Structure formats: structure tokens, C-alpha cells
Image 1 (cartoon, rainbow, N blue to C red):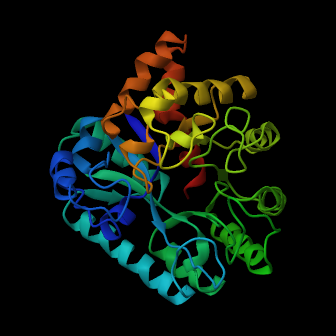
Image 2: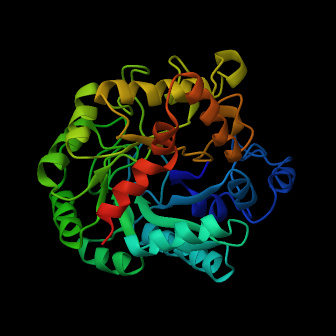
Length: 354
């Protein structure tokens, strides 16, 4: 089945993890076997050959860079300008992948429809399509820089990431939108961009939904009722998104799938985490909404984690296909499964991309 993945940090993996995503997965892993700088070395799950093998022909691909001011609890770039420059390097990588026919940027609904038709005819030779998103807006030095990003094809923005941000506070922090954040949302509205509510702290989430008039999605978010944590959404937040016609992409990060995960200690084997837990999240969102219109896949695979923090029955991103029989056994109809695997996000983008 054709798959749309609403969140992949492809350029981050290429630029910061120094992975050549054109190569087979075993080659990328082999080159990292002696590396100890990151816990996921030699355990990556994403590359272009595996995306093709899994029929993942369209995705949301990110620019990601966090500005860590003095006192920020996490690592990041030391100035907004450095963060902006890092994003330009990531964008340059996407451009080169386009020149080499590995990827094709999608900016409009017409381009998306043409890409889907081309992939259906010849998935072997058609580049992987991508919609450009920004995870954490800190690299937008000031709001006047947004138009330039838009002209470069940026179509969605998640203002926050982890901790305090320039425009909004994110996971494990709490504050209202900053004045700059409110200005950013107004400019995004003017440009008819997509607001990605993922990572917004609760205060910023509710304020953003009140202020923002344009399309909203959550590219990679799971249910707080299943795994209690501020990174997840409460039922009230889900319901507010349903009312906006949003789609929520279920994330595959293991600590977001099963409770009591301890980073660096819990393993897929010890926790028993599997793609069944992904299906639990999908089913929960469907039951809460009362329909199958608001859920999709936002795997976040290789989003600073690898097999050590993924479902135990997932070897590579191609194994997203394993969800199809799992959902069939749970009683999902063929049309419902198609909505989950690609249809809901494609329909959303048909409306949101101008």
C-alpha cells in the first residue's frame, strides 16, 4: 500500500549524523559500527532504498535547528543566526537530492497530484516526494525571514521543540506564546501555511489554536491517555484538533508508545514494544473522534533515535507496511486503512496547499 509519512528528519540525518541516505541500510550501519558519539549509531532505519521498498513515496521532510540561549537545558546552536545557517545547509542538501532525482519538492496541490500519478505509474524511477516543514522556528531570525523560507518551498512550521524557544515553549516547559510567536503565526496565516502543533506546550497550544486561522495538523504526536507525558496530547487537545479538521500523525518513538520507558535503560525487548502499540494509538484516535478521518503516520523514525528506541518488530522504515495486516486483524476496512496510511494527510494537503 502507498504510504505517506508526515515526519522524517532526513536532512538532519544527512548533515548532523553524516549519513548518505542514498546508500543501502546495511552500508550506512556498517560505517557507523565503531562510532559511539550517539546512541543510535549503526541502528538507523531510514534511507531512500528502504523508503522505496516500503512504497513510501511521499513524506513531510524537515528543517530542524534549535537556538539554545544561555541556560537552555538542551544542546543547540549558540545564536539564531547560526541556527539559520544550519537550516540553509539542510536546505542545500534537499536541493542537491532534487538535482540527483532522489527527491522532488511539493509546493502546491497540483504538484502533489502530479507526483502521486507519476509514482503510481513508475515508483522505481520517480523521486520521493516531500513537503518541506520546519521543526522549531528558532532559525527564523525574525519574522521578516519567513517570506524567504516560504519562497524556498517551506509550507509548514512547528514553532516549538524541546524547552524554551524564541517563538514558543515546547516539550518539558511552559509559557504562553511570545510576542514574536504571535507575530509569526499572523505572518504564517497571511502566507496560508500549515501550523504544526506538535511539541507546543499546553499553554502555547491553546493560545495558538485561538489565534491561528489557517490549517493545523500534528505531524507526530501520540495520546497522553496511553502514555502520560506533556509531550503527548490530552483528549481535549485531540478534540480541539478534530474540530479544526486536523490530522494527527502517530509517532514510532518507543517512549511515546509504552509507559515507564527509561531512556538508555529500557529496550524494545525488555518493554515488549511493537507495532501493535502503534496500532493502539491509531485505534485510540479513531475511537475518540468517532471516525477514521483524523489519523495518519508521522513515524519520526531516525529522529535522534534508531532501533534501540523503536518498535521491536521494525527493522527499517519499509516495515511500516506491517501495519496493514495488523489493522486488518483489528477490523479496519480497506478504505479505513488507506486513510490511515496515506489518504487523510493527502486529503488535508489537497485543501491546505495553494
